[in-house]
Length: 376
Image (cartoon, rainbow, N blue to C red; front, side):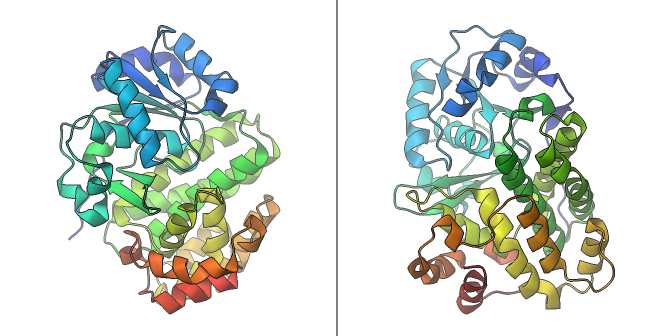
């Protein structure tokens, strides 16, 4: 049975940040904590958003969001949230800031350690409507966390796990492409490849949700055309808007689930000393997963080929390798400094990731290891 639900409100347009006060009211937030990172502050985006949104400069700000959000950062932000008696959050940044804000939203309203709310620990049933409201303002076009029901967190024990609940979907999302204009080319490419991997994995997932499938393929078509333009010219506002739409659509399609790309990239991203970017990992892992899944995707791969401009029977995995490489992304794990000795450990951990179950084709530990070796 297909279960289909889309539950949030998105304001999409250049200059949409000016409606922040109105959207805060709609989300039920009067005393916000802004969750962001130091790069956003240094770039002047925080000042711009506070000013254009009519917020007082005394608004509390947590700017310690790490590249991969951690349990420790969630605890720190929670202390600030409680100290200022906040009643909701504004997440300003990429997926890390938005996921961290969602984690704080859970902790602010529930008893227990954050790890107990991970989906693999039965957390779906524990997260309730009491979750604090989040208003999301993305400054990248990749994760789509502004409309997603999940958050990926690196925990103290070294595991990287997902929180998942409809109550984690931000109450409002302000998608202003002007906030992405300053994103450097390589980060634009990496976050864009994240969106592309979402669209492809959701489209090929065996979960029955035709609405999500239609959204995913539209997102892929947009991203394939717009991402090279956004990388080549960061001031191309139309390309930036198209990428923001594609990222949002990739996350709206999460209703179908993801797959082996994310089952591998999540444990890889848990190694804090390596500081691996999620979108870059997805770009590297996408081709071997596409090759592995092809025998199970006779009905979906023809439509994927059409979406990216390929003819019947063309090498989809090879196309994605060249596409990402042309954007400047290094296409091996070795180039990122991943030790080869970690590969068996990562393959084993992939089996435990919540995205493993919805891959287009059943995967074994040996299969995962072979895919990792293929791109090492």
